[in-house]
Image 1 (spheres, rainbow, N blue to C red):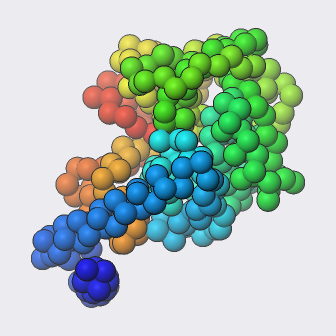
Image 2 (cartoon, rainbow, N blue to C red):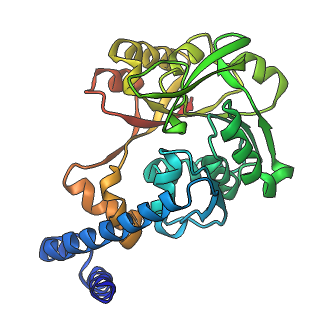
Length: 323
């Protein structure tokens, strides 16, 4: 079975070189789908392997090559985590387009990375040439993995075991089985644990640390944090518009950010997880060329946030620049 897979992959790659991605897709749809099926069969075996390593942390390299990026590094994964750790175990990357555009927009910048989880995005940022990364992660178990994963970069990182909030004090967090979805907002996900953790406002962190770029993934709590005001030193924000934020709050937040001088340098509708095998075997640029033809993903540039507020708000990532 694997011989068939490798032969299919070789024919596919040869065709792309000779006639291009779009023509290959038009002429070889069945072959692509067959390869996708084989890759999914392989992923199911990996899924079983992930379950077998329960209680044993597992190291996985980041697949920079599949994302058309240069770099090296990897992550120790939490076997209790049914979210990011499992997904990354299977593919070696996550949020591929978001990763690609963050990589190409952090060189020379100092980044405050909020919701760092196991350290995937801090490692991407450091490989891209960020001067320094201040990584914040509130969940104690996840923080231990983060500290281990960022140890090779000690000279360029500051690691803080705390949450970001709209005020200083303690914050209650709800932790589901997918640990990367831990949030101050109680969603419909089954809750694995509730914790109290120290939290600081964005202005407090800005007084203590020097940074000009903010990456945040705090599962719908962005409104409460940002609406209190954005320090003038922040020139770039990388963020996700979460469904849990709700339409009205999302629109208010976008209009507020526009008044603060931000524009969407890039607005990204991410490639769905089910198409990750295409990326693994064709690389991100080729997969994107195919999938955008079928409206599975989009990237738009230089858009006013008031325009985005009027659109049908799919889950999307934003690369914001203050002008």
